[in-house]
Image 1 (tube, rainbow, N blue to C red):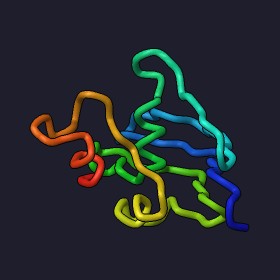
Image 2 (image 1 turned 45 degrees about the vertical axis):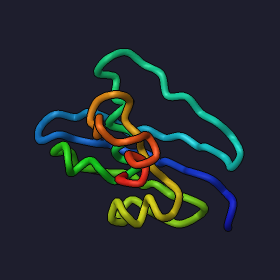
Image 3 (image 1 turned 180 degrees about the horizontal axis):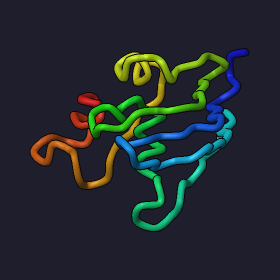
Length: 109
């Protein structure tokens, strides 16, 4: 089932007792661009951390749901394996290495 893109199904995320995402689902077919929009605290960064498997670095946990990429479930993989598969999360401005180039920050991810 190669080439199917990204499929997020019923993803819920918590930071301790706080529920940050509740049953989020979306599809990103190959060759498309999707924007995630919302106000501060809406869960945009949490969603991206769930996709890139970096939630644990911020104290978060994927409590339910699944993430598939090109037909393969990836929400149980280590972050480095997710990046190697082609999924990455590049934060804007904050939480990057300011003295490094954009390319070096991407490689560090």
